[in-house]
Image 1 (cartoon, rainbow, N blue to C red):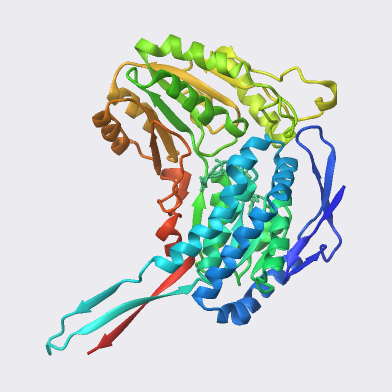
Image 2: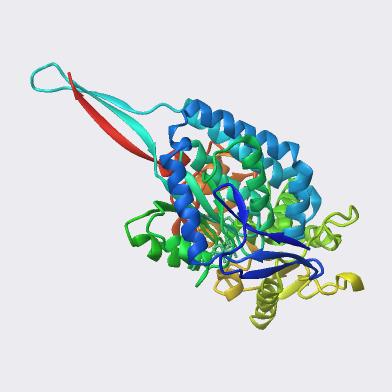
Length: 486
Ligand SMILES: NC(=O)c1ccc[n+]([C@@H]2O[C@H](COP(=O)([O-])OP(=O)(O)OC[C@H]3O[C@@H](n4cnc5c(N)ncnc54)[C@H](O)[C@@H]3O)[C@@H](O)[C@H]2O)c1
Ligand SMILES: O=C/C=C/C=C(\O)C(=O)O
């Protein structure tokens, strides 16, 4: 069992009042770590360290120096790849292959890409005519926002935290991160990386704890935090937005989703089945971009349901480092209970359970884990609770459709607007449908294929703002215009 401390001003420190909480494995409930719990004083210390770093050595760094050191961070993450993989597996219990293929390499890439972006993106300038004919030159300079509060979730903890920390540091800010209480390990490990490569103390700080009445609330209410970037549930976003209104701090929010997958009869059938399988069940369905509502054109509906069922019934629950297993647990027992309550609700509302619907049979040594069965339903009405609310579990409902406009209306009939996948070989239709769906990201014949230069974010209640490429610079810098009369 390890002790996980805050990382403040370049040092690993316990909470000033000595408080801590338990981090238990979602796989078997084993105690993994005793984690320091941040109070007001810890958050205040971290924010002050971040402020001092801005006014100190880090603030004096040139852009080239920042770029170089962020490349160093990425390289050191890669050098310690196995440690990050182990830590993230311990935190989430998800299979090793997701860590090695996606989540940890993305963490390193999140530092490299924004080092490249800051180096290569020009600032705007305008030549302005004036009555005297001599004109004026307007040009923009970008300055860091200041101290950025980063509040991150548990589902892809390292990827989602670095997705914010990378651009924030590239732009010259300093950060205080409050990782999810469920996943404290990789964010803490990043502190070691920062020290190893010589990131000045106070640039990257971590305070552990919970949301309300804890480190999350204290950080987001702290008057010396200049901007807040948050990924998590929409309801939490609303609470943080209220906090940010004190002192008019800027926010960037990546929130929940209730994403549709649309499969046309002319799609490449096997690729569509495989794509929907991944988008609904990867990471045990705990992906904000995942698909919980699948619509399949009627001529291939029965065949599709059968093929997806067959695939889902092959999953093997087990430990993340067991090569014979490919399916992890829910992050916590609390989340397991939430997902199972939706499983019950679906039946209550008249769903046909195609497969799953409960807790899998599991070896004795894993009995204490937060396991649920991957589940497919059919037969629900569009207004059923399970069709409206984000479940964030390994489940999807499949409905047949007959008409393009009908399926677009269904896909859009949600308060969320994060992502969609469309499966078809008809290019005109693909573009037409993509333009009509109110989401931040539509994938055609793919899912979760990410180019980090593109705009990323949600419409409606799935988010505020866009991050990625130049869009991240918009949030993590303040643009100042200088007008020079010639
Ligand atoms: N749009 C995206 O890019 C994206 C990506 C990943 C996850 N998500 C969403 O995240 C959710 C799952 O993550 P989660 O359960 O960790 O979300 P969550 O909102 O419960 O928690 C996220 C973080 O906020 C903190 N927090 C909670 N209440 C707070 C408060 N009042 N003030 C300050 N901080 C507070 C938590 O401690 C945690 O660090 C899902 O809804 C999912 O869709 C969205
Ligand atoms: O679970 C959500 C995953 C979100 C992914 C990203 O934010 C990303 O790829 O940048």
